[in-house]
Image (cartoon, rainbow, N blue to C red; front, side, top):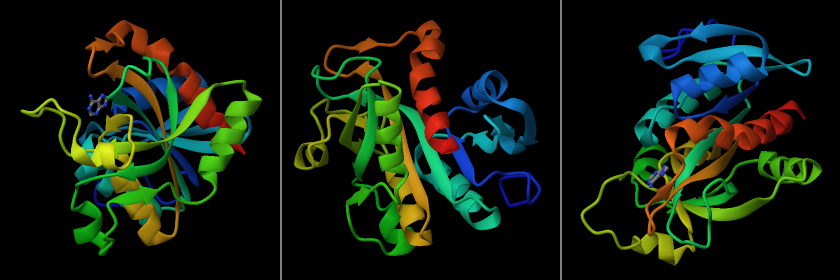
Length: 234
Ligand code: ADE
């Protein structure tokens, strides 16, 4: 057990798929894993461990934002045997060049957040994915004939803001979309020498207001879930 995860040692696999939403973790476990076991439900942040094509995999939520993914990923890496976390989430596009349902494999996360600086004395505002799992995801996407974009992403502390203009940091680092967790995950993995990747499905186009409806989400996220599972399996 760790402070925020009640699974026993040995109940969490080496590879963890991490959506933001606990109910998405439940959906993935129940629909894609054999013999899924609920191993932690502290604060209703659900973690399941099951079998995918013979390999043990855990899927569990990160919650929203750096404080939340910072806690869960740190405890997974340090209190269990986890060596790889693949975040699977959604993002908002800053540009109509991206379309809803597009899949992004995050190369670098840019952030104005002080999370990495004050947690680990990491001063960079642009942090890369960690280890080789990013490349495995790209290779796997090719094998599945799935189009993915390797791209930089803006990782933000802010969902609602006064000024709708694209934030300066997103322009500076050529980030076509925004989410709220990758930078925190990459910072923890960098500090701890672990593997981390982030795969995102575009759920909303900020300039046009277009978005994936609630009932489209389940099917919309399926290709990303399958890509993450296949990469995790390797
Ligand atoms: N995740 C999905 N859409 C988002 C947005 N518009 N801003 C931040 N995170 C998001």
